[in-house]
Amino acid sequence: MKYDGKNVPKVTAKGDGLTAQQILELAEKHGIPLQNQPELARILAQVPVGETIPEELYVAVAEVIAFAWFLSDKSPDNQSET
Image (tube, rainbow, N blue to C red; front, side, top):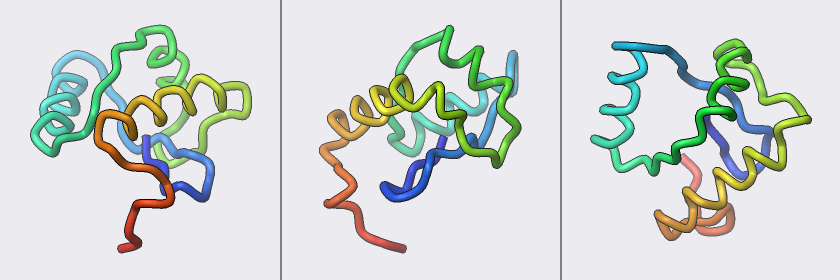
């Protein structure tokens, strides 16, 4: 997922098997925090790449984003625009 702190998060990549492993390796390589939530991942896998997450998942996804920000010491207010 991608979240810019302003808009609804979007699904940016998904896959299973080898593709999923490559996504995880890239995330780790770039210091992107990972959280293991198989049920949420299964539901998000149904969302097309490039689409925003459905409203029903806002709370669950917000928890994941908060976790990632906590681990990386970031918040929407501390992120620079690129």
